[in-house]
Image (cartoon, rainbow over all chains, first blue to last red; front, top):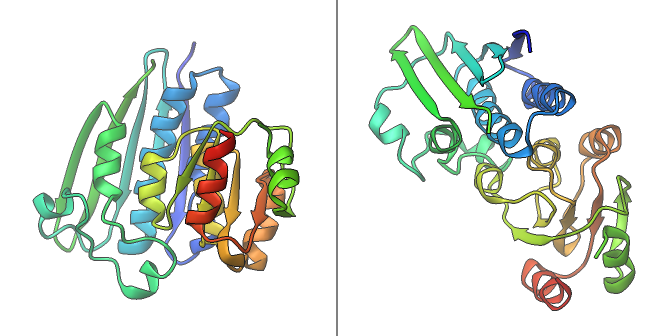
Length: 140
Length: 108
């Protein structure tokens, strides 16, 4: 299989579009005949990251590369950065505002879910500059 | 047990119609979307009060069999349109999550 590259711009204001990129990648993986477990891992990790971009960072960009052995994602935003990564990685810790919580977000499971569903997880963040996530999910 | 059979058996009303012949293989209750996202399984009947467009996205990504809005929780117009577009079945019941889950546990 040749490598497939996908690019998405995530809007920072339109909550109704959140999930569009992960939904599209899921559709592509399904069409390629990628296993349900791999597809789900990618979909969950990517959706959480997409939502994080909308809630915390005013949007961002996602690049996805699908190769024979893995799906590699780079999710970059130019938001405020994460002040305490250790806390942010803790299940149940959330800095989401109340209006976001009322939509059902803010469980504090975003980053933990992303890590749980990725085989490789790297987070780079700088206050005032932004956050980039490098995720890899192996084909299973 | 299919989604259609669930509707017939429990008198749950269809709000949006996806694949009603889909098999329901489990049940998950929850309103915190990331929680549901990480834990719900493919084929689950998802019981929630979250009737917004983000809930529809979670249903699509987790591949659950249907959403059941318990206690007749509201489904907003945008979510309805998105569910129809994406083929997500949404049902509604006056039962609360406990009652609906208890009913499901007898047939699953």
